[in-house]
Length: 218
Ligand code: TTP
Image 1 (cartoon, rainbow, N blue to C red):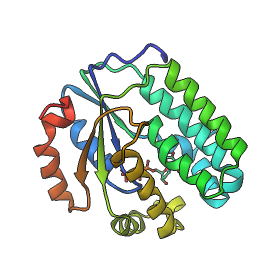
Image 2 (spheres, rainbow, N blue to C red):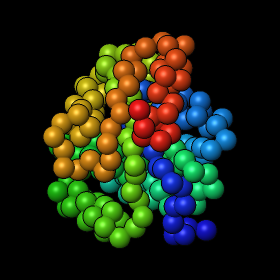
Image 3 (tube, rainbow, N blue to C red):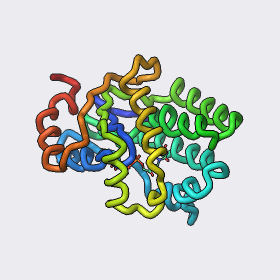
Image 4 (cartoon, helix red, strand yellow):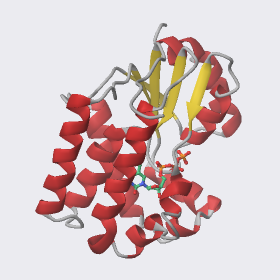
């Protein structure tokens, strides 16, 4: 099943901080005939043979962050390599935000040791240098951390209820550094959408940018 490579002509990944609306964008475009959408496998992270790694990571990051991120990385490789039968492959997140946003944040905040960070990064390097995990476009749902904090409280995913504002703010800074700065670590061009808006307005933006999102063309 795996490692057969990606037959899609155009691979898009949707990025943005926690609660920025990535699933909403995926749900919208998954209705198109020429698009296959791959939702992020959060449920897998919540049940690894009965272990909720997402909850463990939030409860005790010093102990579990590396294990969790290693598993996230594995499931992301599965998404990247999963065969796609349509011309457009739409991915929720990618290997790259795990590395450049979440793991970078955990390391900088002292929740991953230097040894753990190094092992993770070595795996990341081997994967990106040897497997077909390229992307053609990144859609960045840029959202203020204040807005995200409110949305996360409202959606009430149990593991996330204790996320402090500072954590969202730090992750925001890393998304901005990675996607908006002069980054050598960007795997593809970036289309930025302001995602602070209401749901109806977000749907309008998706309509307006359909051609760019599905082909990279203006
Ligand atoms: P997100 O990948 O941001 O997904 P989401 O459900 O918030 O997306 P949206 O609301 O935009 O549709 O995060 C899912 C959870 O997993 C969240 O609690 C953050 C966590 N996570 C990590 O801790 N490390 C990671 O590398 C990734 C990808 C997610």
